[in-house]
Length: 58
Image (cartoon, rainbow, N blue to C red; front, top):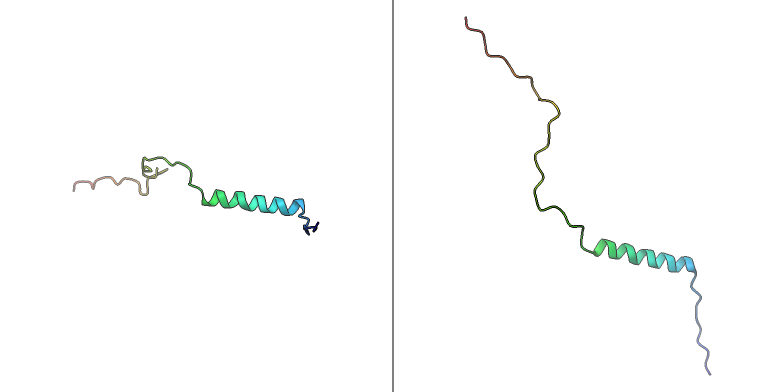
């Protein structure tokens, strides 16, 4: 019988191949579900300018 030449593959090489496959599937797969409602307006922490008082009558 004819013997086949088989190459030995290291476990580190198999780990790299597996990690690449998982990363490729994660990047190619659909994204997480996001909320359908739009984001609200940004909340202000302080007013930009203090309110001005009306001019005094002369």
